[in-house]
Length: 103
Image 1 (tube, rainbow, N blue to C red):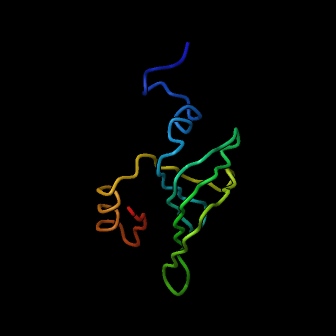
Image 2 (tube, helix red, strand yellow):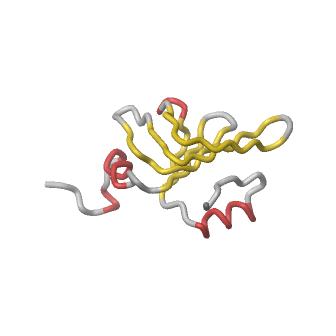
């Protein structure tokens, strides 16, 4: 029987429910991405579309727009689901160098 209690979801079930939704991915290192989750596998490799990539460089923050990207699950540190305009606004206002783009 399928698990219907959200507090008892397996990680893969949560990710599966977010396909088609906008997510925020924080990579190991100085990159963060916001995009629409299109797919993933058992290694949490992810395909994102309509992506905005944020990178901290010596010159400052660099923003790159990408149509599609494949992320290696080994390099993903954090995935935040349910990105909303208000969450992005709070991050931009309160977090130094906050990056998600609410689009």
